[in-house]
Image 1 (tube, rainbow, N blue to C red):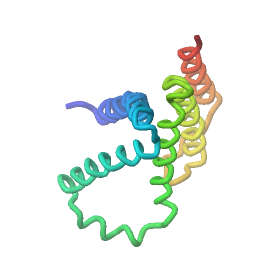
Image 2 (cartoon, rainbow, N blue to C red):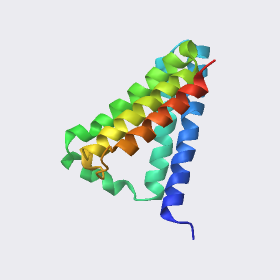
Image 3 (tube, rainbow, N blue to C red):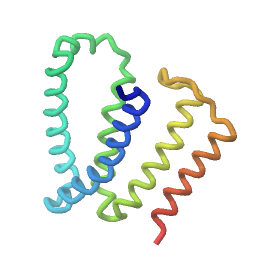
Image 4 (spheres, rainbow, N blue to C red):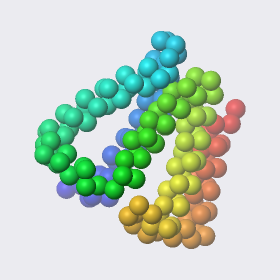
Amino acid sequence: MISDTFRYAAIMLAAGIGIPILAALNAQLGTRIGAPAAATAVLFAVAFAAALLMLFLTSGPAVLAKLPAQPRHLFLAGLLVAFYVLSITWVAPRFGVGNAVFFVLLGQLISAAIIDHFALIAALPKPVTLTRAAGIALMALGVLLTQRT
């Protein structure tokens, strides 16, 4: 049996691999049709259909009845993903997929460290120690080095 840590790491590695592919594909669609917002709308329509399929295959639609009781700030995630997809679709053809994803990764490193350090949004607390800060800086440097021409 595969450990949970390995399984979770593999899933997130696959998600990470998908981000630049998503960026390149949607940027190309937006460029070809001349409308990044339209390409983003199509992406979300396809994603919505996939999410609905997973909803019906796993928990079922009854869980949606719990939505009205949830704190409104939790729905900000939808705006954040829309901002990400809209911005990467518009920026990647002008700035390069690698450069765009580099800054996304840098932002993720910074944001994740802050969220974990202060245990924001019910995250597991993980303080930013000197060792962790050095690791994050090393990761950021590594990503930067991969983008140098």
